[in-house]
Image (cartoon, rainbow, N blue to C red; front, side, top):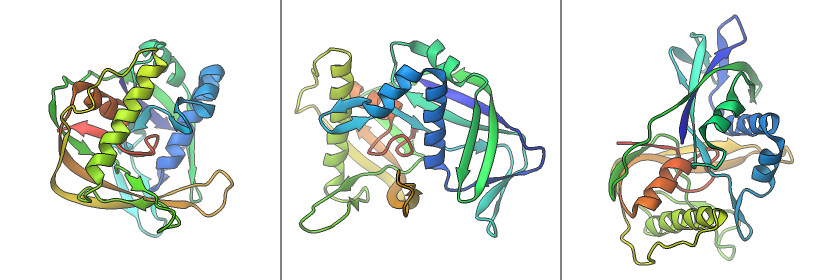
Length: 263
C-alpha cells in the first residue's frame, strides 16, 4: 500500500528545511506509530519482521515534495516558500488495512529536527494511491538511494557500500529481496514457495549517481555515513519479488533508503 501524506507548516514565515532529513523523517514516522498504536509500534520497533538476528521494518518513504523551494548554501538547507509538503509512505498490505494507516497519520503533528533546523508540521490529508500492475519485467527509478553493502571483517573494519555495477551487486540485491519475502510469508504463516532457480536479471539503465548521507547513532555519537545510488533499472523476476521491493524498498536500510517508482 502507498499513501500520499500532505502536511502543512505551523510556521507563518518561510521555513528552513534540513537537506539531509531522511533519518529524521523515518524517526518521525516511528513517533507517529507510537502515538497511534503503542502495541503495534513497540513490536515493529523492537522485533519487526525478523529472520534470526536480522529485522525488517517493511516500510519505505519517498522524498519530500514541495510546491516551491530554494536551496540556501549559507544554511545548508532548503527555504520552503509554499505552505505544504508531501511524502509517500509505502508498506506491505497489512492485516489492519488501509483504515489503520490512515488513522495513524490523521491530524498528527510531525516535527523534524536535524543539523540545527527544526520544522513543525501537521498532517492535512492521507490519500491511498493506486497500486501498479506488476509483470515479470519492470522498469523502476530509484528516487531514494539504494543501499547494498558487504562486510569482510578480515579485510575491512566497516561495511563496504557497493555501486550497482559491482559484480556482487545483483546477487546481494536478489538475496535481500528473497530474504524479505521469506520473512513476510513466515509472518503470515505461509511457506516460501518461490523456486530457488527462478529467473532474476537486474540491468542498470544509464548512469548511477552516488549519494552519501548521515545516519544519527542511537548513542548520539558521530553520525554514520551511508552510501547509496540512485539510478533507473530493469528487473526481470517473479512477481512476488517485484512486489516486496516496490512496497518495502530495494536494498538495505529501507526506512530511509531504497524507495522506487515505476518507470
